[in-house]
Amino acid sequence: MDGLLLELVKVSRSFGATRALHELDLRLSPGRITAIVGENGAGKSTALRLCAGELAPDAGEVRVGGRALHPARPEEAIRRGVGLVHQHFMLVDGFTALENLVLGAEPMRGLRIDFAAARREACALAERTGLEVDFERRAGELTVGERQRLEILKVLYRRARAVLLDEPSAVLAPSEVGELYAALRRLADDGATVAVVTHRLDEVVRFCDEALVMRRGELAARTPLGAERPPELVAELTRAIMGREPPAPLGRPAAPDPGPEPVLELGGVELRDAAGRRLLDGISLALSAGEIVGVAGVDGNGQRELVRVCAGLERATAGTVRVGGRDPFAGVHPGPAAVRAARRAGLVVVHEDRQREELVLAASLGDNALLGDLGAGHDAERVARRLARFAVEPATPRLPAQALSGGNQQKLVLGRARDRQVRALVVSQPTRGVDVGTARRIQTALAEAAAAGAAVLCVSADLSELAALCHRIVVVRRGRIVCELPPDASEDAFGRAMLGVEAA
Image (tube, rainbow, N blue to C red):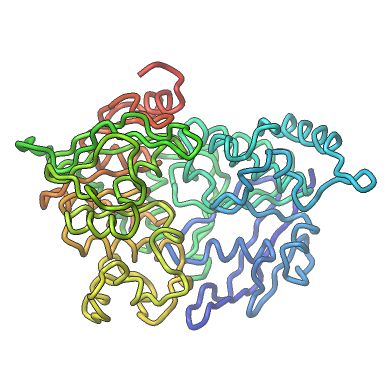
């Protein structure tokens, strides 16, 4: 495979009054895995989207193989060999993996799609790259790792010679992360251009050939990663990203003394879908005041449903959710009324999908900062406090939420949650897509909530985060708690439990 040289030459790009890139010079070379790292709002994802033709520069030039990308459209970038794998999967769950693979690029035989030819090419491509997928299964039935592999195969099927990935490992189990980068290494060794936007610096050091550090829309540093990769390299990258010393290691709060009754208690919670399939299977868990309990597991094993039941958006088929010994959802229909009942009981929930479940993207930051606080009015002091808690940038109350980077959207959501009266806090993927400095601030805020007496349930795909923050960690698989592990258990032990390699 002949890779492509991708270049951004003096590229600037703004969104309204917000400057995302300023005269950025960036170069992605064939045969290498290049990591693009930086704080939230540094312009990383914007740079990838420019390379993929999803955005056009305000000034400067995007070059593919030495020639300007014109017109700046995704179909032109794909025609020229550039493929972008988005952070959020772009699959049709009801279609098979093969149908998703060829969607929009179907091989035809007369007036019919030639699925036999597509299957032969797909299988050959999977074998050559090591990206194995069951092409006959529906996308909604695939594991998260298989869905990630299918997304990469989609761009390769379209003859991509440059593969760009935005936060590809955010939802993967530890073993799947290794498999992902092994496949990317095969592509790079075959001559492809591979670039990864990620906040996980340990993966950058382990798997990538170089790191491009972005800061405030400009290239701040380029760090080659040779054969020798000393332990202090992560700290060096963190300093380059932040422009200052990295934050001190997070200290886990002291384990609380169990109180007379749990603050948050899940008792035999079950949930079935419309077809009768069991999504949650007897989840029982009790959290004391001041306790932080982690929930680990491969994405799609009931975590989202568990959080929605806690929030009152789904009614458990069986079992109860109790806060301070009382069921806040008794006699209340699932939905907005139940969410308000939970909040009155002091149960605050932060969902994983900030764009769909936490924000109204077209509404202003001010409106989003007060979202859910009926009767609060446009309290300027409260808005300013919630924007400032995690340093949302830009903190312009009239700016629409969709103008923020993903990380700054997350800061807004967490700032709003922590500003409420909290007895029990349920958070899902609290630091997904945020930089190391912001992640530490969020983790510290969760520890502070526990120190103030709240019970904290933290669902996260980041095992290092759970190990640093939690007093104990449960592993969920297929809607069940399969085991409980101490925070210092090995990554291998977690990975095996998450994937069902051995019995709990």
